Length: 413
Image (cartoon, rainbow, N blue to C red; front, side, top):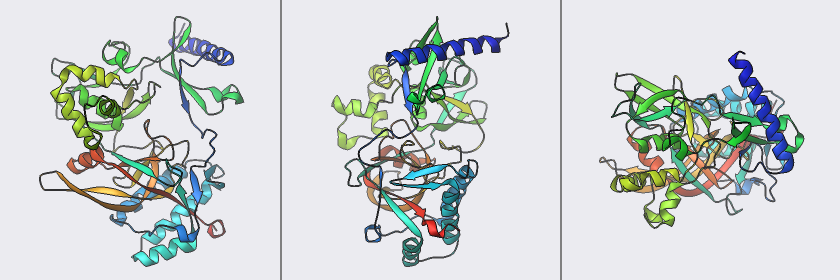
């Protein structure tokens, strides 16, 4: 029997098994991904009156905003013009969001003052504010970046840690295709010995090498901590020993929930909360190599990659723009939408040390998501690559405010 028919048969059996287990309410062992907003008492966005608008300004080169808007337009033009997007109590079609971005892009191409910018927004746009984690608009901003790793196409004593492609036996099943009861629910699983099981967790993959010989390897890297943070960031560049550079991007996850090793180290009083950063975690692991396995395996989530050309892409499939691309909870905030943030950014010395933090106010585009970015009180800013990006992304844990802008309906024509 052809391999494709065999795969089709066991996938069909797997789906039937999953549905049966769900009908009995006993499939909690399989990881569940939610694609649409759960029922909540407080909406994630509230519509503001004009007097509540922030003092809009922008601290970046405007050409980067043009690039980011273009990327969102690329995404929106790929989907149905009649699809609806939710902003608080309001709904807008794809066509309206496209016009909303086009008008803002057109305005931004001409020289403007802060006062003319504010006047333009007040006259033409509706502004929404995230209700945040406290229902009063408080949002925690973190950052991510594109890391660089050293690797090889071949395994060796020096390059021992595999960057896996998505395994053939990983299944992602949209349960809503089979019953409206499961609207928005998706499981990641595997089929083994007539059973549907959760996919292998990090420890099984990293320590027990459960995928050895079962999943293709893109490259082998020289540092497992670097590989762990590559999975956290979602994309990166691997500099091979042949001189070749390959770009690896998020392709799939094992479906297990993300658990923060930073929070673990704080809870265990290994690192004070005030000192927590990616760089501080790296230092701790370097000084305590005997704890690396335990700490990394605290996070059961595991990411699989694909090799692709070009710069990192977000969850909506477009190129990310450093400083302009934002990751939010995809269940709550409309993909591709124009947003505005007010938080802080680092000042860095010539020795690549953070000397302080100053206000950061800029327009961004909602183009990505992340396993740790959940709820209306979380947002993650993409910083790009290089020393400044790594510093900013590694240390950014600052409160701020998040707004979304949509063109007034009567101006859409």
